[in-house]
Image 1 (cartoon, rainbow, N blue to C red):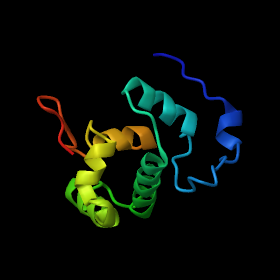
Image 2: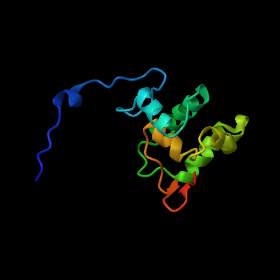
Image 3: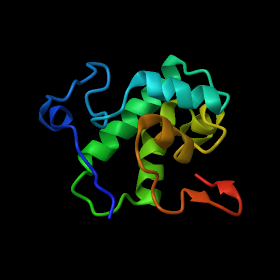
Length: 123
């Protein structure tokens, strides 16, 4: 059996919250999101950050849910960004799938079936 040790300092430290991303996961950083975006050929703009904030807020509001429902998340994003074009607008920002790709950048686990290994991102 492998011995796994945990740094006690990581366990007791207060979470450092980015004031611009108050609902971000504990270990998430903007630098990590930029790194992932760069690997995926994206340059993050204010519009991308707005989507990331919206996703993090949605997940925080549904943290007690056992599972994030893909359809409900899709509909919530479509409604939130409706004035800009809804999901069509989100595909222009995240060509790898507005939910799958933006979840990766937001430090969140994409809902089940947001990516299909046979076809790539579907949402």
